[in-house]
Length: 388
Image (cartoon, rainbow, N blue to C red; front, top):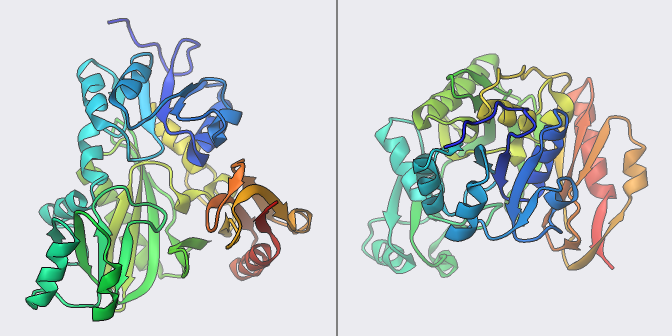
């Protein structure tokens, strides 16, 4: 086996599985160090294809594509969980450094296995049960073992609100999703929070300040994100400590986004995690000393972690495709938004818009969080992503 060159050496090769917006923003962060980022995804037309020339067209769910891609690299990471981990296990056996490790990725990409992990490690989470399919759920309801309201989550392949069904009453059982799933007691939620933890191979950890999330009720995905979260310093400390506990339990190297429920009784419960850069950390590009993307690179390359201090309060708003529009994307109201002080637009370059598709995000920074919120709502009302 050839010796691995040191990071930032001209021969060093860092790869990422996935070339969407997260891959694009990782590549942009790597560019500050003149570090080439090698990307595997199905089309060079995807967001990362515009910012790195080292793009391999292939399927990150295919064993051979992942294996052949990984063989050329020194370190491999991900921007999406749903990749072929069988190939990653083989590459790891052959000496490739992979973050997060395939074993931990196998757990995290299965929401049922995630919940069992929390139970095993005494990590607080909402009560749950696992089922083989939706018919087994119906049988449990008919026997009185469970009853609405509850939340159904598919065990695999869910993201951006997909794979989740809220069953509020007996009539809504028609909305059960097919396949293996978990049923979770519906938590009386006061706030939904997230904390991103960075951890390098030496075990150094850093947490970004907790953020508060506001969801789009139609798409069931984050619409606004507020930083700092409107919580007490004591609760902030508890949230960061709990997120760090989860990252250490998983032995994560890289980033771990920990989504939390704050319930009506003031308890923090782990909802789910993502072992990569995450939507809840996009604001850090403009509002923190170190962005989540640079921090992920620092962690997987085992560099010292950067400061996570805020430069200013911020609001992030996801820029979603307009309802009823599918086709080539047109951005209306762009100039008006750019004229607002503190507004930073990040467009992902997706050629086709679809209803509620994430087409970009805007981060608004201001000395006053309430002022930033007003500006963010102005951006949401003004910038419309429609089709021709």
